[in-house]
Amino acid sequence: MGMGKRRNEFTKLNKKDETREVLKQYSENFLNENMYMFLALTIIFYSLWCLEMSNKFKNIMYTIPLVIIIALKYSLNIEKESDGDPVDLIFGDKILIFLTAILAIIMGVILYN
Image 1 (cartoon, helix red, strand yellow):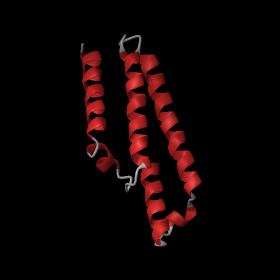
Image 2 (cartoon, rainbow, N blue to C red):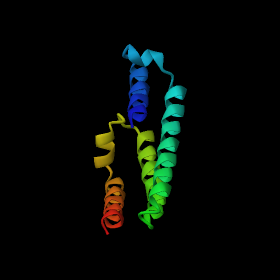
Image 3 (cartoon, helix red, strand yellow):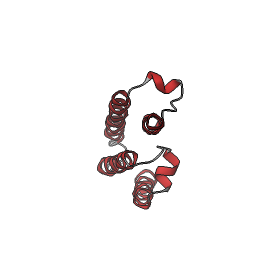
C-alpha cells in the first residue's frame, strides 16, 4: 500500500515538476517493481499461513482465491489516476468493500465455528 501511494505521488508530482526531496531518490520502475513484489509476497505469506492453519481450520484454504482477487482489485485501483491513499482507494470502491466484507464474514465463520 505504501509503495502504491509513493508511486502515485511520484507520478503526479513529476508531471508538475514539484518533486519532494525524498522522491528524487526513486524511479517509477523501482516503485512499480517493488509494489508488485510486495503484492506477490503478501499473497505468498498469506497462502503459507493458510496452509499452516489448515490443520486447525479445514476450510481456510478456500479464502486464498478471494484474497488474490482483493489484491488484484486494489492493484487495479492503484493504476487508475489517484493519489494512492489506501483509505480513499478502499472506501471509494464499493466492489472492494464488498469483497473485503465477504472475506471478513468467511474468516469469522471459519475461525469461530
